[in-house]
Length: 372
Ligand code: HEM
View 1: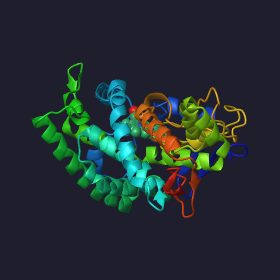
View 2 (view 1 turned 90 degrees about the vertical axis):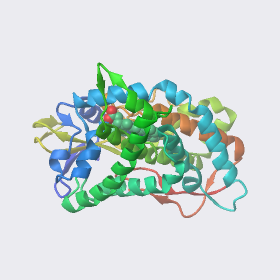
View 3 (view 1 turned 135 degrees about the horizontal axis):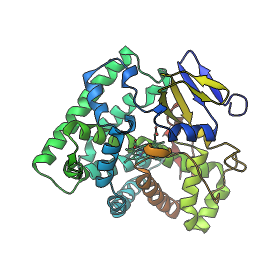
View 4 (view 1 turned 90 degrees about the horizontal axis):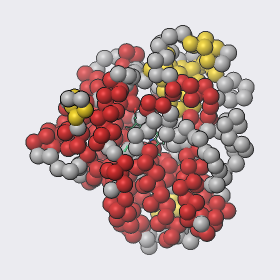
């Protein structure tokens, strides 16, 4: 598609697809023309509106700036670096539990619980509630790609039911932290102040909710993708065992080669020329990160998996003002997990029965049985 039809209009789904890396980067860089706010296209629902109010991913400037600045004050590189010891302990516990099991599922046993436990601990909520977070994530994220991307009235109602439960859960937690602050991220969000501005309860609900969702599905997908790439490329696994310092570069290459979040979605605010097409105002544009990451104008031999690829300017964490706030955390979690896996398992081999997400949304495994 990138070569033959770099911009294409899918009338049935009501979206424009953009595949080339220069166009994708331009879309993500220009929030005035390519907006991240979609509420005007969705049927109004109080619980959805409430959830979206603090959802930094679905905001344009100037609201985006306020939310992002305050959130960045609480979610600092220091906060992430301090998590390394905790991630280490959690990863060891999960891997210990897998040892000796006749058959392991990398997703259920490690790639899913690790980021959820980390994000739950970071926010100060009980990790045991994680089946609920998984249910929320499944109902809010996965089906988007199957329902034409902008939810219709029926889907908005279904989302509102999930969001009501999620909003109530988060609000309860936020109120407890307002009354009795601890050193968790929720307490930091409650206290964060910039130029005399603070986040109100609803803004914090949206942010906590977004972290709960964004903080695990993508990281789970990335960890499963690392395993899939090493299974497909045993020479890369051998190179990593010989030179563990190459691991951070290998993770970047997996991010490029198997992009966990395939498209980013925007709405045009005016008629705009993209490639050979004029896209009218008010249209949904899907900027395909996964395709941009295989663009030969950006990467030499893009279909080759090369753990030593430098530079590696992939777009897997987005670009511009919405660049992923959790990128350092995701990289840290996956690096620690992989260091342990490479040290513990002499061979990585994917068994039968792998199941994958719908690749038009999340690109990664839902179930990944391993022979270890
Ligand atoms: C934004 C990917 C992990 C929190 C984004 C965006 C991408 C992305 C592509 C931009 C979307 C857009 O512009 O439309 C990923 C991938 C991850 C990952 C591939 C794992 C491999 C995380 C984690 C967290 C997180 C672990 C938090 C704990 C966020 C937030 C935003 C975001 C808050 C919104 C930033 C903004 O709008 O300013 N992520 N993410 N992500 N991500 Fe991540």
